Structures are given as C-alpha cells and as structure tokens.
Length: 101
Image 1 (tube, rainbow, N blue to C red):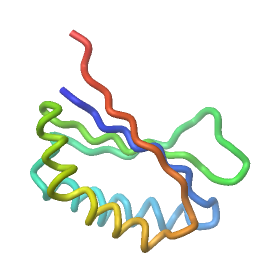
Image 2: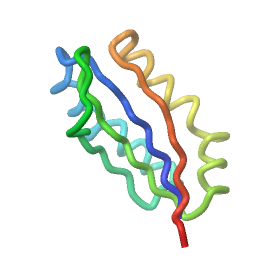
Image 3: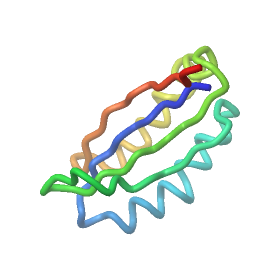
Image 4: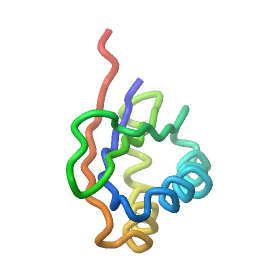
C-alpha cells in the first residue's frame, strides 16, 4: 500500500467552509477517479503555526504505480480546482509513504 499525504495549512478564517468543501466536494472527486482505496482528512493536533490550522489529506492506493497514474491523469486538474478556490489562503506539501513490510 502507498499513502500520499498532503499536509495543508489553511487560513483560520475559512476553516469551516474549507473542511466542508473538502469533505463534500474534493474528497468525493478524488474517490471518483478510481485511484484510491480510501481518502481521509485529519486535523493535525500538534505543531500548529500562528497563521493557520493544519490538516493531513491521506490518499491510500494499492501501489505506487496506481498513484503515479493518478498524478498523470487527474492530479493537475484537481489541484487546480483547490488552488483557484483557495488562492493565497493555504500552503501545502506532499509526502509519499510506502507500507514497510
């Protein structure tokens, strides 16, 4: 299993709107790509900075190739939806995790 974790620090002023949009719109769009076993949004409960609240978007795939296919086919369009809607209201970074066996 591979997990793509996107950590997002979002402006405190829009937390309610943003989490609602993520749960009702963005996560269903991710799931509809067929690339993920599961997608979940978690609030980071430690190391919060002064300017925003951090969340971890965990996208679980069967394997690395499935995630790379998602990147090629869908990621740019979905990222753009988020980037346009919340321009200048967030910062983010991605980490890819592979299950240790």
